[in-house]
Image (cartoon, rainbow, N blue to C red; front, side, top):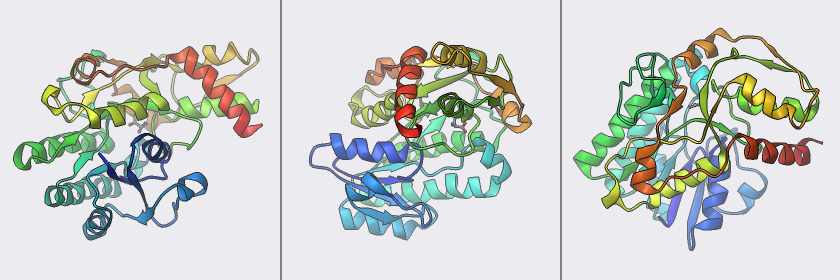
Length: 317
Ligand code: AKB
């Protein structure tokens, strides 16, 4: 991958992935695709080209691909799970019509495509512990429906047209740079902001709600590494389970109290998020990603917590 288009470059993943690709891929041009109202700012704006890129407009994507001779597209445009429940038609439009626009451009212009899937692609019938790579995927949220369909459509374009599609199933992602918006796992970011600001945290999910979580540097490494993996070694493509830690609100709260012993948390359950979380795995088995392309996370809950607090203190205080 040399000339790369990141669609959704100002979102939680895109803002950091675009910068990492610009820093680490030698000789690359990394175009930051954004929608009006979510323009790149600061370092993201200064460090490379940016173009308006709405996934619902296939000709706009094709123009950018031609203009910059793009060979790899990171498709990060999506409504997260809780928002998608409120706006299911918009979620379908962005996630599915957007994806097929990208895949068609990729087919015509020979681009590789990364479109993330999620723990949200699983549902209540999925084994919850050590969730296998290949298992039941019958999600009950609109987000999950679009994520399973994303996996299937991406595999279809690979098998039928040879488009080099690859993907990972992201856990809840935790970062200090850009806030997530409207996900079920967002509490695991918000709790750190409350702790550093010295505020009580109102947790929207119940004690005992376990989900896979991951620190952003590991998630970014996964997104880069899978696109660089030797295709001959890939038995799977869309999509790989990746995991690094699993916790519930009590466990992350206890970890934060090692730094802020007076930190207080109360529960104010959000029924939409709780229902979604209850349908997702507790912890995925990521052995296929480890075997097929060398996935290996660096952070656990303790090291992530130390790093989050350090950076949020610089950012907020
Ligand atoms: C969400 O909560 O919707 C996302 C996800 C796990 O895909 N963070």
